[in-house]
Length: 98
Image (cartoon, rainbow, N blue to C red; front, side, top):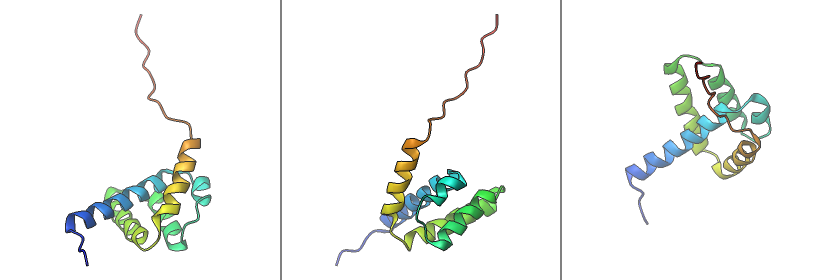
């Protein structure tokens, strides 16, 4: 039986938390398009509403914990499909003076 190192476990947890960050950045309409477990869906909506960094960071850790309990592959695939449809944001250019 192969044991996974603590570093690999942490990296996997961080990857799931980053996936949760991507979910939080979506609009509510796009979040509805993804088949999420109820608890994860509610946690994502709550994270979107939180403005202060401390509570939001704790909520993101909670989302990461919920992501570890479900299969992330369908969520990743749905996110990729949605993100491919979204227009890319480009930084606004400043006008040059006369």
